[in-house]
Image (cartoon, rainbow, N blue to C red; front, side, top):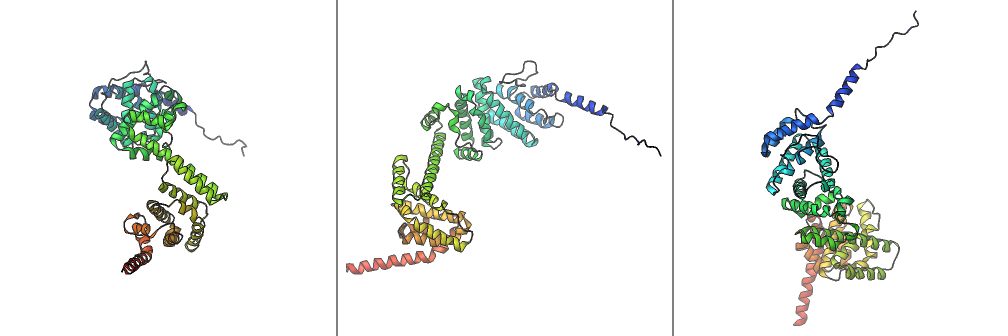
Amino acid sequence: MSNQKQQKPTLTGQRFKTRKRDEKERFDPTQFQESVVQGLNQTGTDLEAVAKFLDFSGAKLDYRRYAETLFDILVAGGMLAPGGALSDDMTRTNFCLFTAPEDVKTMKAYAQVFNKLIRRYKYLEKGFEEEIKKLLLFLNGFSESERNKLAMLTGILLANGNLSASILSSLFNDNLVKEGLSPAFAVKLFKSWISEKDINSVAASLRKVGMDNRLMELFPVNKRSYDHFSKYFTDAELKELSDFARNQQSLGARKELQKELQEQMSQGVSFKEIIAYGKEEIKKSSISEQMMIGIVWTSVMSLVEWNKKEELVTEQAIKQLKQHSPLLKAFTTQGLSELTLLLRVQDYCYDNIHFMKAFQKIVLLLYKVEVVSEEAILKWYTKAHLAKGKSVFLEQMKKFVEWLKNAEEESESEEETDGD
């Protein structure tokens, strides 16, 4: 028997080398750029034809590999060097976003070109967002007109959901902020966005990516105040954005206030001191009593780890609210504040499923300890309730409301008898 083992077949490596060489050649964007530029030169300013050319060419050209090159050409006419200048040694076209007329109609047409392209070739979506982020960082390398067109286009794409608002993080770049390019670009962008949709669309998109509290970063540190922000954007005829920033600032203040109240309650600070602190905050921060009762309610309910069983959670809630009723009473001195509290209770019981059956008992307790009046309860019942869980909560309150109405009628009848 031969000790020599049969030699296993091995790959020669020749094919691998060829592949590597071919792959390296395919990474050269020159041919790709020439093909795209030639097509754009032929279609010219006819953006319908441009969209059709891009749709058709995706089957032949490697969009996946050369996404950045493709978007550079469509925006600037050729490949961009770091900083935003066009590469000298590459073919370029004069038919692109930067050479187009600076008007809304043309920018909307360009937005459609990008929209159709990305809808057709879904894999380009991420690359397109990266491209826009890069272009924003290159603002200093573009002319004012080019920046304006890019801002208008970006605003339209954001409004239509073709981009995530996370791309705005590029505008917080220190150099752009320092040179004042960020707020100027933001003015054009947000005008375009709001014109296409509205401020609610802006707010929702910013909140979704955690940008709603970062708009102050468009300005240098020494100018990051609401007053400066408000004046800048109001002067630029963007009062909606100023109002949004003010609401965000107010929301931040409310969160801080709620945190402080919770800490005071958990540390056993006396109700007298907490009430004094709350009243002072109302004066100092121009917070309404209605806003304050909402904060107090949330603070009180956040102190407890609630039981998951409905029968036990009701008992827990009654005990907690009875104990803290002096706090609730201190900030319901107006009828509107009482109604606000009832709406907060309804909202809370609906959002926390274990509290659904506790609503009537909570309201009854608040009535007994004189936090809410019968007028507020009747107003809530007849016309001021929320849609959330309406049928369940109205049914729970039906007998108590009937009792209140009868008691009111009897009281009026007795007054008439006394008058006689």
